[in-house]
Length: 440
Image (tube, rainbow, N blue to C red; front, side):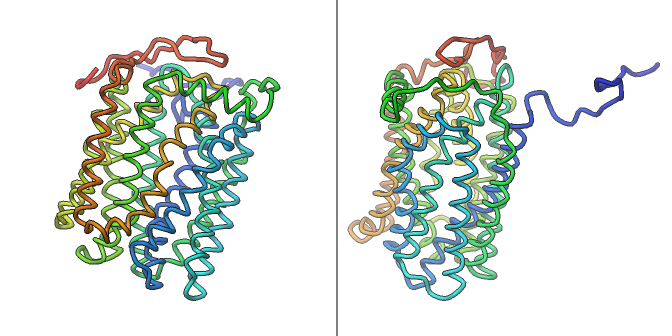
């Protein structure tokens, strides 16, 4: 019996379907660019910490460089969100990638040339953070506008799976490269990755996005974004939760983690593999979310944030490296369930023309305390000891996650049969398949 005829083009010529319908051109370009960026940047995080330690720096110096990278996010995120909702988002993304490329190239040159000064590393880290402040809201708005309809949640899960898989490889490769050839070459590879990712993003098409109506200026845009953000209890409650959780996790992983690795685990190589185990967990979590569609999005996601306390607790002990790998894997898998649920909630609830501004408030809240936490990690270690500081990080993650669950909208927000279009008008969506087991 003859098989069913396959898909054909407009001339009747048989074609091969290479990707699902929801993986359009923009989505594919965004995914490819994210893979390239994450391969470089996660290796560079390991390299930057060990570049500071190689110059004789201590935990306070590592924390200052990490804080310098995060502080511009606090200062410029809101401006970046307003700009991204006003200008073509792909232009903003490419310009930000160019700044990141130049700053990382300069950082690499300093490290390869000799012993860089602390203020130089802080300045270049700050330039990289500035690029991220403009890139993040534009990228999130661009991704969400590239996906619609029944498979939005699956598309976000696949995107995050690809992104986290690259982060896994980048962290492992970065740790190995730091141990083998030094941090300077890892930073140089990150600069090249930003250049390639920017070139890919230059080909994004924004023709499907409706032209923005003339506004009353940036301050008016920011006020409109704030009203959208503050009027949704589930939104600000989760952002408040992660403003603390992200801060203490950043202190544990950016400052205490490399120190524990140096003193107890064998140095940069094992620490890079531990970060890679977290990345492997996020890939597993994203794979799960391609199939599981919890009805109560944020309840399922927030419950899965509790294990994020485990890595800090494991470093506090400290556990053997094999146990740390398992802990990092579990934490990565569960927090990725939250990540996909969060993106799906934003996609279905926030109007397209306000996505970047709401994303900016989300990012701002999520990183606002990170500079203080990373800069204060060294003094906290001196005052309380590294073990007590790490237990404090773990306890705060549990406390704020429990607090978020006290907000009714966090527990009750459900996957809807409609999603919010531009201007707040609902449009039909079929993303209502029943969840596969578990909460729903």
